[in-house]
Image (cartoon, rainbow, N blue to C red; front, side, top):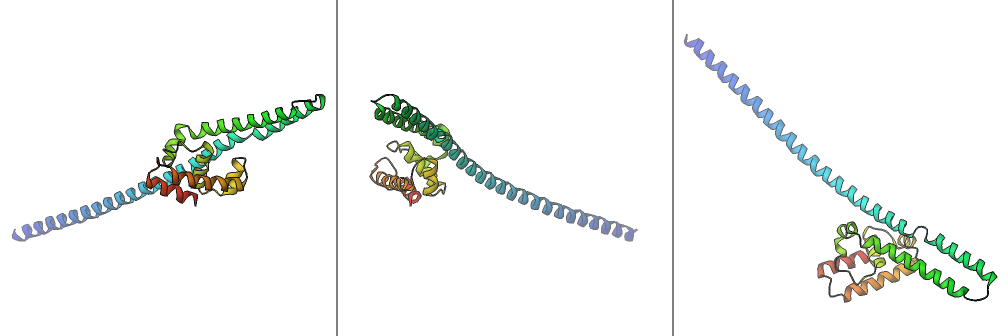
Length: 195
C-alpha cells in the first residue's frame, strides 16, 4: 500500500511538474506573442506616421499646383484678347496688359493664401505659427524646403524662377533673424530648413 501511495504521490508530482512546465511554456509563448504584438503596433504606427507625412507633402504640392494651374493659360488668353483688340484700336493696350498681369498676380496670391490659411495647413506645419509677417509664398517656400524639395522644383510649382526662389530664401532668413515674434527654438528650426 505504501508503494502504491508513493507511486500515486510520484504520479501527482509528475503531473504537477508537467502542468507547471506546460504553464511556463504557455506563459513564455504568451509573453513572446504580446511582445511581438507590441513591436508590430510600434512598426504600424511608424509606417502610418511616414505615410501621413508623405500624404501631407503630396496634398500640399497638389493644392499648390491646383492653385497655380491655369493661371498661365488664363494670362495667355487675356494677352491674346488684348492684342486682338489692339489691332483694332489705338490706345489703352498697355494699360490692359498691365491690368491682366495685375489680375493674374492677385489671383495667384489669393489662391496661395487659401492654402496657407487653411486649418489643415496650419495644424500640419506648427513651425509656421507666429509667422504672420511672412507672405503666403514665403510660408509655402519654407514648407516645401522642409519637405526636402529643391529650389528648381519649388520654382516650377510656384511659377517662378530658381534665382527668385533663392532670393526669397535670403530675404526669409533676414526676416527670421529680425523677427521678435519667433521663439529661439523655432528660429533655429527655420534657419536649418533654409540652409
